[in-house]
Length: 391
Image (cartoon, rainbow, N blue to C red; front, side, top):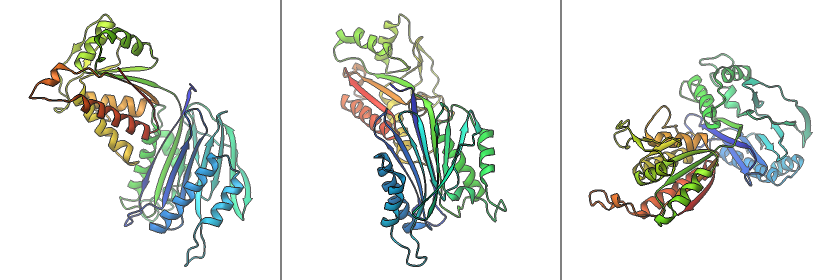
């Protein structure tokens, strides 16, 4: 497994009064070990027309670049495809493209968007940039090797226009964005956290009323992190030892969910489950502690909340990180799976839990299986590589 992972995230703010954003971000990542392509397109103007322009541009360029088409063909295709504005007699969408190859070269292409910011070791890095004229358009190209920890910030011009004529005379210029990022940078910040940080600053500078569509896209080059989660004992008790041995033989962090599962894990590790009756959230059962396990929680109720958080986080680029700063079981699982993990192994036991046969708390096995299937779907939508096994 390649040790590097292309973690990405973005946040868009619509221009005040507009229902659709005129910017669009598109990501192509064919296989976990394949090339990675990210495109940020900014359509001319705002509203529906800008949304169509940026969507077409992002989709066409991302698809062509992902198929290793030369940039000359991409730009020519865009020029021939986009509709012409009847008022301004121009038809274009500005764009920024990042392509990372398997040999770890990065190819950066920029047309009329603010220059990409690259933080290397938390400080601004001035990458090489070369001018090229394609179909009458001035394109800037860059090629260099990526480093572990590199953080690329892509932005539409709504970022550098933030605050113009309001809180700032000349807007939030690129050097200001760099200074803001450097001051707040932490090596463990996720790509989406950085995007939310910068877009939040833009929202404040616009005083809550963005004067332009504003999009921040982030690519973070990080190490892969495997997280293994087990919920429920195997359907055949004779397999308990074998499944536990397989689970604990995996690299990475471990999460054990459910009372019976925790007891089996503790027995295998020759220790005991320690419980603490701290209801940090009245709707979420307390967590437990097992020496040798990173996190131990209750099962189905906790996992139900995790799936709710995953659905919100995966469905909207601007979704809040509802688990930040919280210490209940669901929030701790969410942080490990959504932020820490790049790869997830889900071990799902199919044994019926006797406690769930209580008429006061009837929980069907199908509910647990459906929760885990939903969790897998949402994690994959976040860009995680997920493997689910049933026992």
